[in-house]
Image 1 (cartoon, helix red, strand yellow):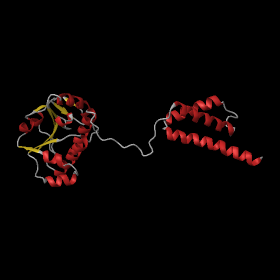
Image 2 (cartoon, rainbow, N blue to C red):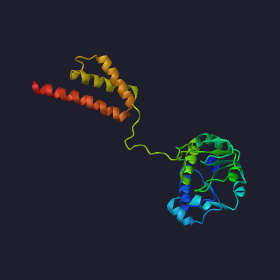
Image 3 (cartoon, rainbow, N blue to C red):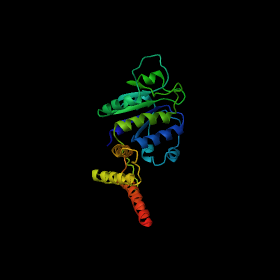
Image 4 (spheres, helix red, strand yellow):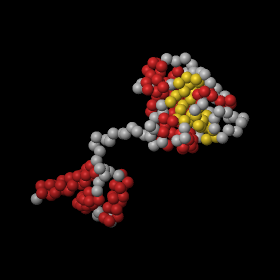
Length: 248
């Protein structure tokens, strides 16, 4: 089981089913599975899954609570999210700084990420239940969509947990990195090609080839690409040879 399964998203009185669907999609993308709703707006689970395709496992696990205390009862650590300036001085953090703390606490038990209503956020009494207040760095326009806020937090946790389980398929023309002897053969043929077209007439061959080597190193070609560059140089040499034979 992933350590991320110890992280619970808690919504305090959510008002829009669209945000529930967006959050369920985020959770599926980022490896979270537990969503708890305190006094939520009425919603149709089928419609939630209709918006967030392939998330029935998460939708079926959604739990409802009448009080915030009940939703947080089994949590060892609670991080409240909000963007408004507060009169009281709660410990403050950001999603990036919070992520390693959450992963550390999750080893000991369930951790809650607490979010408030779309229009007013979390009331002070809800933040009182948290150990830390997390704010997402933004411009002066600090109002984020609820599901977007969850995405930022969940993304940082996903990276911190090293839980990127989806493998990106290699390009169909993927090739290994070239070996040293492949590099040297390609550079030798490029050198011969430049010599054959009298490129070195007013230039220092050693300096030019050092620059070519540096350029190719920075480009980082794979074996197939370096072979293509070498083939270009060889074809120039062959073309010059054919022209010379035609003039004889």
